[in-house]
Length: 79
Image (cartoon, rainbow, N blue to C red; front, side, top):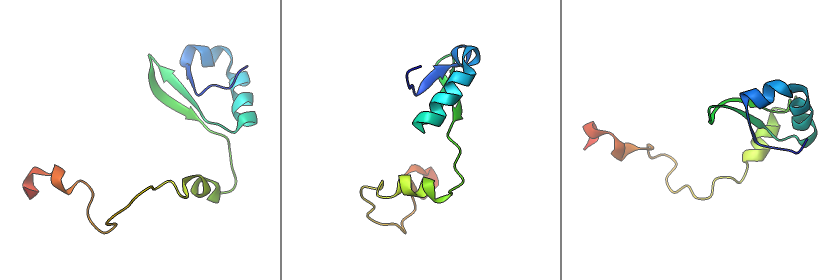
């Protein structure tokens, strides 16, 4: 079975064990869809909570003002 990132519920149901093995081997998440919309995510298990942080490290490209509220201009009451 080739590695994939998205699969429909009906495809997943028919070959669940194969998809579990593919996620375990590739260490990549699998998104299960229902009528084209994502509903579930199967991710490899990890006992290391820092693993997620390592993936996120250096992912912020530019952050000008970390203390400024996000979306401040989106609220009508503040205008």
